[in-house]
Image (tube, rainbow, N blue to C red; front, side):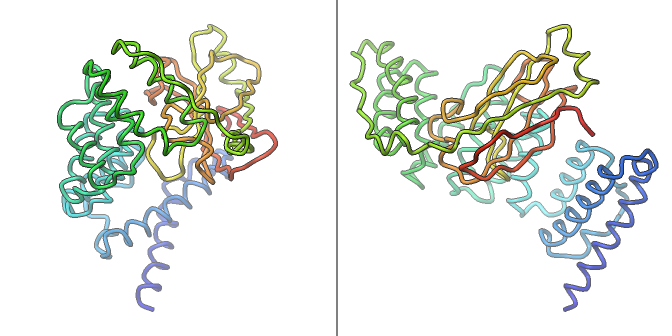
Length: 341
């Protein structure tokens, strides 16, 4: 009872403080944005209490309310300095740093999480990927490989860890070893994922001087297992952005990812940005990883990103739409207006 009352008061305080801080938005007529941000602050405040398990986390101390995602990340880091035993907090920090493009910081945060939870296979895989993304040449080093191998030891059926071990072997010129790793993975994959992986296997076999593999024939039922999991998305640019893309230098990404999961997309398409609407269909063929397919999920969040650099990772100056959750299978067309309030 006391806890429920405290949470209610905490939510009320958060709403009041947030409403005051964001008052300029309301005065500017952006009522929807104001309401959304205030609600987000309430959820974040109560969530922080539940995460730390102590009301002292809600005390303002010397910190001001964050004015940006960057400030929020720094404040989360400060909280973790006082509560370093929270592995889930380090994971949250790492994923946030990835979203900000701070690869080295994210790799360090994942490593802190692993010190607390060294036998979590998905965490081991995420940490290894983050470490590779922080590498100047996007390579997996010995530490990243050790984490992937440990993930396979802890969870032998972990498909992503097995696929990435093959990637490491390919990066190091161990093509025949990569063939063995990936061919052992094939029987556990859905037909569409297996087809994508066979292409990589054949490339590795060619580099190793081996003959191409013989593709297996998928049954009609299996071949149709991904039916209904394609998502048709129509992206329209707000007028303010249409002038920006007139020079033809921007790139438009349409992305689907697992809600609340790692930032790695399960499907992504890349197109030159244009002033007119763009319609795409995201499906298993758009997955950057054959072991993580759109058809394997029951729900995803879809969003669009306008990039000046053409880099798939979010960069400063990129414009991103608000993610929309989509339950799968789905029909119809998802409408996204990029650059709208």
